[in-house]
Length: 356
Image (cartoon, rainbow, N blue to C red):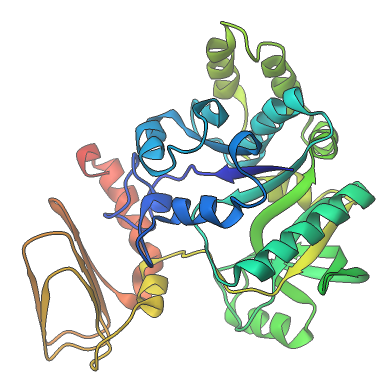
């Protein structure tokens, strides 16, 4: 088993705490460790050292080494630029295949919060067994506890097996992020699960699927494979990446392939998509305020403050998010937390790159 931690990201959802060179996975949301440190710790008992890969962009190299310096540097794979998850995993699969053609890849995002490590481990091992025995592309579907509109969904089909009390199914279909009414129908049916963005498959199975469903990407990957370990690798990699399309593994492969299966993840999971989710997870005072850093709240309720210096005072406020990092301050309504990325886009258009 080889575990691959996807540690890219552009730092838009958690701006201004997260930036281009220090994206979400480097934040400490709970406890004392960053999200990526928690991810590495979570899987260290069964995938560490030579069997752990981290894939990211070179601009984040220094920050990665600060957080996960225990990982051998040769096991860091750097993309010249982000082109979404299909190229990212294709490139990583090439490097793993060179070491072990029969390897099984466990693919995990670096920035998820996960509770109950034992249940998580059982789910991973059940997925590995399904991937090995059925030569399938396995995804982890999270048991939903509310009609969430911020996640994609997976609809289960036939029950395949139960492995160590973890249910495995064939997959009927994938669904995009729904509106609230549709999400409620999904929940009531009992057939839909949140799409976690975690995957398990043999390297050979995945590359075969890329060849079938994304032939242009496959051809590009084969050009890269020829030069792995050679002096011209970086030059070829950069040239190839300029030409390949930005495409996700979900859209490019998983939604099209016939051999997709799902194991049910019945553990605490949160992909932390916005400051609102951080507020909901945070400890609050009697007025419903969650404060990280120095702040004074007068006649203020149900608000979140994250301050890295000096002091912030809120007077007569309700349902606000206030985040101060260096010379940048974010103020927004809690129900608009998903729109922080719009502010980042506008700042980029105005060419205030120093603040990104």
